[in-house]
Image (cartoon, rainbow, N blue to C red; front, top):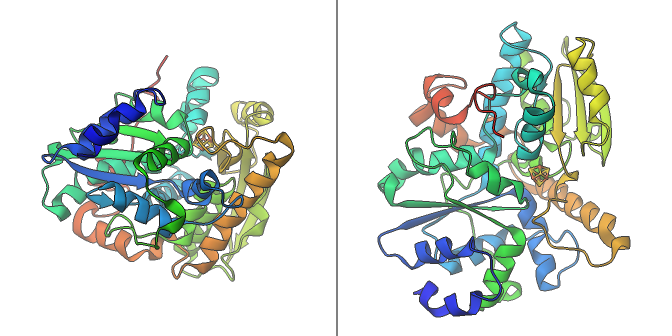
Amino acid sequence: MLATVVEPLFAAHYRGDIFPLLAALADDEVSTFVQCAPAVRVALGEEFGMPYGSLTPGKLAAALHALGFTKVYDTNFAADLTIMEEGAELIARIGGQGKLPMFTSCCPGWVKFVEDQYPDLLEHLSSCKSPQQMAGTLFKTYGAQEAGIAPEKIFSLAVMPCTCKKFECERPEMAASGYRDVDLVITTRELAQLLKHVGIDFLALADAEFDNPLGCYSGAGNIFGTTGGVMEAALRSACEVLTGKPLPSVELDYVRGGEGVRFATVQHEGVELRVAIAAGLADIAPLLEQVRAGEADFQFMEVMCCPMGCVSGGGQPKTLLPSQVLEAHAGRRAGLYSHDKALPVRKSHENPEIKKLYEKFLGEPLGHQAHELLHTDHTLQRRQ
Ligand code: SF4
């Protein structure tokens, strides 16, 4: 119904990406499952006149329910899952199983950069799929089981701050369950256009909730949306898992920051982790040359292509005045941290739905099922 009503309006405004979504929403035989990246909830409001960085998870969930999605899920859940898998992988590598330093693999622009420019370093990339792809593969396996819906009837949509995620979802290897992990990616701006054209009054929406089980998230999953967030989330869990004792505080300010490269050494209960964080690729070459020469003095490196991570991604609302770009990015980043602070669970391994997922479906981190569905071999997957 939605498609037949609004499709003519779109013809002049949209690239082809929106039409498969409209068709799926209008098809009674199809169940539509949607996920939203963390950075979307601190930027979408700008398209409707709200100040930079306005935090709107409740309105975002309400808007997606109003569009008619069968399940309104969240990439943040899969960010928590990424921490479980990536943390286990890091611990295994420190124990001698695999190359160090390990690089994060959640930014598809960074993965492509390594593939193209440093193919000899591909083994350093974590084998974890990105949160987008992990969520997608769960939609058509665990999510399908929990909802009692056949996987072939599920249309999997991701709303992302990132144009590069469109490329990632189309990679041939992203279908290990036998179904495409993600059928379509639209950006924050494309979602805003859709809401405006359909006539959903975003500002007037009452807050709603994301659906369980795949919409439940911790503060750690939420800060994936800015530079240093993946590292902070990983440290919150890895230090506790390695020592059995929690960090004195989950506020790891020393890994937070802006564009460029920074380093930190974390010492906790006799364990020492040395990490690097890079936002943007401008200063990455010297670090990669150190890795190449075997001289890198860190065990884990987070890299995000965009200047402040995904809050500044190419699919986010555009800031018309160049002088306000930094203000917009900083506002969105502040929105993510304030959301993290307000959430009842702030560590990925304490997310109750993550615990249930392992008990009911995955087994254990890096176990057989997790390996099949949530990991990939970057050395085999290089694309031109
Ligand atoms: Fe996409 Fe930029 Fe985020 Fe990388 S940092 S995933 S390119 S938005």
